Length: 84
Image 1 (cartoon, rainbow, N blue to C red):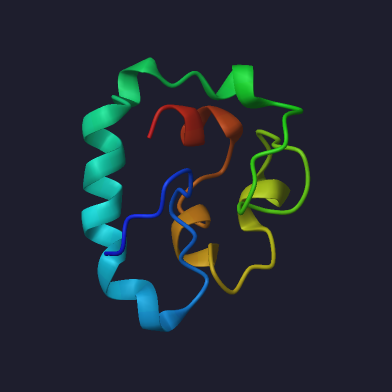
Image 2 (cartoon, helix red, strand yellow):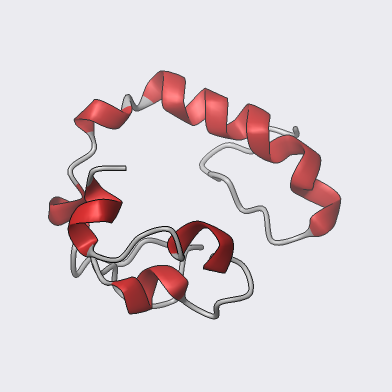
């Protein structure tokens, strides 16, 4: 991983995929999952995620389908996503 000041997890290239796990671990160490409230993110723009304001909906999670389908298809409701 190449640390860049002010840049978080922009893994848009398969070439960078090997760094995903270590970057995820680094974020989880700094931002505990128990401190994240997805409801507070609704309507906010989260750069490098979907290109639209954040939603707690299946349609948002599925996005273009190709990338997130394997994860999102396990959930049938927003509550399932929030409780995962």
